Amino acid sequence: MTSSPLAAALEVEGVAKSYGDRAVLADISFSVRAGERLALTGPSGSGKTTLLNCLGGIDRVDRGTIRFGAACLEQLDGAGLARVRREQIGTIFQFFHLLPTLTAAENVELPLQLLRVPAGERRERVGALLARVGLAQRADALPSQLAGGEQQRVAIARALIHRPSLVLADEPTGNLDSANGTNILELLRELTAEAQPILVLVTHSEEAAAICHRRLHLRDGRIVKET
Image 1: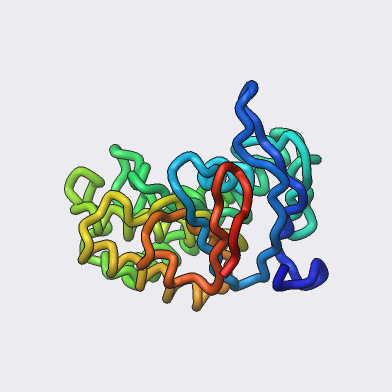
Image 2: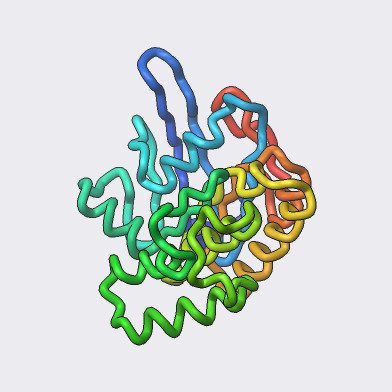
């Protein structure tokens, strides 16, 4: 591995996960430093999204440990996992997953509401981040009134608004055309370089993997190459 356990903000050791008789992950180990961008690549069915779900506390591992900051995710109960996700993790999805009845600003504000950030600070932070992603003039638009690239910009702002230590992105350009995809990747690279969270990005795209410092290539639930 390229970083020592003492320097790692995220440490994965011996992780295995199965669904019934089907092994999806087997003996996955790696570490990621604070501020590092890591791409998870590999063919469909190689375990990339399952690994991302385990990192985010959505799926429980069968064996192994995932240490994130001071927490060992496998030792936390449901409330503890929810707290870590709420306070320290931001997630970006392929299909945006914006709440359709909320405006762009309200979607971005939601993580701050869950953390009980005061209303004045919420407005200030949302306004500043929407301006940073180029959507200050679209703050009051509903998701249905936004183009795909605009929706993903809102989703990125929502994932970063609470200043998480870990950002998980699952094929963030998979539902966009090439021009919008390129713009989104550059925005994601810039924002994570500024805020310095860990970024773990699942992708089939060479262009998306290229914004990362390092790549892990998975096949049949195992890491077969690191570059």
